[in-house]
Length: 298
Image (cartoon, one colour):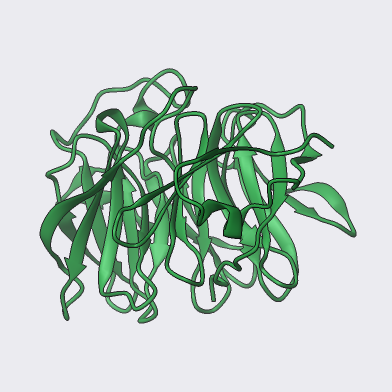
């Protein structure tokens, strides 16, 4: 396995990634990977192959299998508090839930009677509410099905699972993509892909957002734009962007980059100790060990 390469801007990066660590190829030869989500109790990883139109499952014991064919070009995935898989779909412009009997339930497809653009990334708050970004990528040729837009903005939404109410939280970003909460859920981080910016918002008591401000800009060479984003158990913020995985302190201080063999789109932590990062490259799933653990999804 090749040694990892680090672009170090702060010594704190070496507390996360060992300079003699290894970049392991888990699965290769796929089409366009996204949306990895680790099931903390069943011990497997589910992730999307957008252009392969399928949701895949992998574990150390069982290897690679197809979890769901004809995934409607699923992109982002996560789990709700009951351990049910939630997915964003490029081809059908909706957010779905896989129920315990393997029935797919559509949770959101329209806002005020108009089709969503193409839900992209998704997170769940501890109260069960769902937050997702809705940029236009799934209506474009590269990773979607070209078709007309019905909305004239790209939003971020909150879905209340109790009453199915869908609330537009912000339409102020160009193309919102990755999003994640701070550890105490008082903040929501959202990146804006073409602007190479990471914004942070206060999360109000009713779940709405306020006080938008710029946290950081991603920097460096290499392919990629701000994409999948999460925090670790100590509150450091990670974002797939130019050249690999960018890491910031919670105040926006740039620690540096884990450079990747190919463009990476998203990532998650997994393994029994939550110290393995799984990164979705365009065609390859990678694994890297970390010195700081991630946080289970539920």
